[in-house]
Length: 408
Image (cartoon, rainbow, N blue to C red):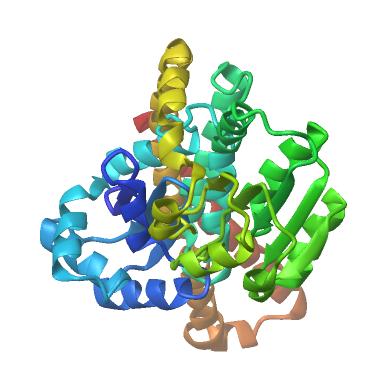
C-alpha cells in the first residue's frame, strides 16, 4: 500500500469554474498519462473526472511534495500560467498509503460527493479506471485496489440507507427547474448526449415534457437520444444556425472551451427577448460568462445546488457514520489480501526455477545414468520427478499463505 498515491482537485477546495483548468478531454487523456508515466516513473495510473472533482490515482515511490505536485500539474496542463499552477498546487489534496486507499473508498461510496449517497459516482470511478485499463495504464496492483473498492461500495449501498431516496446532481438540477414552474410544452434544447444530459432528459420525459431537440458532436449519439425522447437531432456544428427557438437550454459536454458563446446564444435567441433557462452541468461550464452578463437568464449550475446538497448531508449523518465503519473494516481486510498477492507474485517464479533444475538434472548431471536405465525404471523415475516437482511448487505457496494468515 505504501506506493498508492492520489492527487485530488475537488469542489471542497477549488471553485468549480476554476476546476476546468485541470480537466482532461478524452482525446488528451492518453498523451497526458503517457507524459506523467515517463516523467515520474509511474507504473500504473488512472484518471477520474466528474462534475465536481478531478483525481489522479497512481502507484509511485516518490513523496507527494509541493514540488512534485507543481511539476505534476505542469505536466498535465503545460499551458497554464505559473500563477494558476501555484494556486492549484496550494489547493491540491494529496493522499498516500492507507490514507489514499481510504480516500478512494470514500469517494466511491459517495461520502465526499457534492450529494452524499449519489450512486453515480461509483459508476464514474469505474468508468475512469476501465478507460485507463483498456489503454494499458493500469496493472495488477490497481486491479486489486479497484476490485476491493467496488466490493466495499456495494456493501455500503446495500448495508446502509445512505442512498435511500437517491439524490443526484441531476435530480437536484431538476428540482431547481421545477421551482420555475415551466409548462409541459416548453421547447427544450439539449447540447451534449452524454450520461448527465441523458439522465436529466429522462426526468423531463417522465413528467410529460415532449418538445426536445438534441445537438451532439457525434451525430449518431444525438440521434440515439433524440429517438428515445421522440425529438430532433442535429450535429453540434449546426447549433449556431438553429432558428426554431427554445425555452430551456440544457448543456453538458466535455469541451474545455465554452460551447454557448455570446455569439451562439444570440443566434439561438433569433431576436427573442424572453428570459430563458440555462442548465449547465459541465465542468468547466459550457456557457460563456458574457451570456449571463448580457441576457436575462435563470442559470442553474453545480454551484447553485450546494445549499440543497448541504441539507442532504445533515439528513444522512447517521448513515454516514455507518458507512465510515464499513470502510474502516474494509481497509483492514484488504491488507492481508494485498500481502497474499505479493507472495503469489513472488512465488510465481518457483515453477519456472524448478523446471529449470529438472531439465539440468535430467539432461546434464544425471543424463548418463538415466541413459543406462531400462524403460520401466525410466517411467518410475519420471513419475517420481513429476510428483516431487508438483510438491516443490505447491508446498512453499501453501506454507507462505499459512504464515500470512497466522500472522494476520
